[in-house]
Length: 338
Ligand code: P6P
Image 1 (cartoon, rainbow, N blue to C red):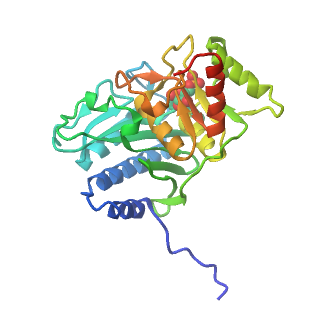
Image 2 (cartoon, protein in one colour):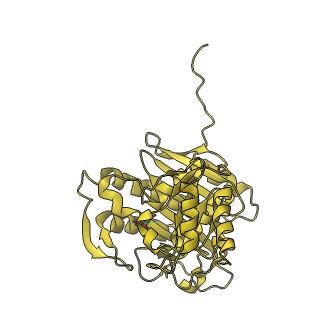
C-alpha cells in the first residue's frame, strides 16, 4: 500500500511493431523484420554518437560525399551501420543513402520486397558543436515484378509505406508513422536498451508563432517568401525565430510545439537545398499524418512530388496547417503556385 504504482504495461517499439503486424492478417512479417533492423541501426548510431568525442569520432573523415559535403567520420560510420543493418535484415532489395552516389542493390536478396531511403546522419555539420543530429528514413514496397533498381525509388512520397526520423539528443527520440496511421514518438531508455512509446498519436498544434528558416539566405529569396517572412515579423504579435540548422532538430521542435520550418528554393539554389527522397518526403509524411502540411516552393503538395534523380532537391515549407496555409495564400496572391 502507498507504493508508487509501477507501469507494467510498457509499450516498447518491439511490442508495438509485433502488435501492428497482428492487425494485418496478410502480413508475412517481412516489414516487421525490416523495422527491427531499422531499430537496431538507430541504437547503434546513437551509441557511437554518444561516444563520438570520447573515441575521437569527431572531425573530418577526409572524404566527401556525392554532394560535396565534407564527410565527418560519423557520417561514414552511420552510413556503414545503416547499410549493414538493412543488408542483414534480408528484407531490403535496394537502398538509397545520402552518403552513396549510386543506389545500393542487395544482390544477395533478389526476392526482397522493400526499398529504403535514408540520410544516416542528417545535420552532421553540427556534430562537433554537440547539436542534435538525426537519421531520416523512408520505406517503399516494391511493385510486383520490380527488379529493384533506383528507378523503383523515383516515386512520390504518397507511395511510402513508412517514414520517420530519429533525433540523437539528450536521449534518442524516434518518430515513426506508417501510411495512413498515427505518428508515434518513442524515447530510448538506455537502461532497458529499448525505445518506449512516449508520444502516442502526435497531433500538431494547428498554428503557432514560431518560424524556422535560415534568414542568411534572404538576399536570394523570391518575393512571396520575403512578403511571408516580413508579415510574421511585423505581425501584431511577432513570431519567435528558432533555427538550429539541423533539420531533424528543427523538425522535431516544430512537430511538438507547432510553427513552420522553411528551406525555400531561391536564386542561389533554384532547386532548393534539401533532398526529396530522404529529407523532404519522409518529413512531409510525418507532418501530414500529424495534422500539418508540407509543400514545395511551387506550393505543390510535397508528397506528390516525384524526384527526377535519387539525390534530387526541393524547396520545402513544413509545419502547422494554418502556418503553411499562410505561405500558400501569399504565393497565390503573387500568382506563383501549383
Ligand atoms: P543551412 C544540414 O546540413 C542540412 O542538410 C539540414 O539538416 C538543415 O536543415 C540544413 O541543411 C541547414 O542548411 O544552409 O541553413 O546551413
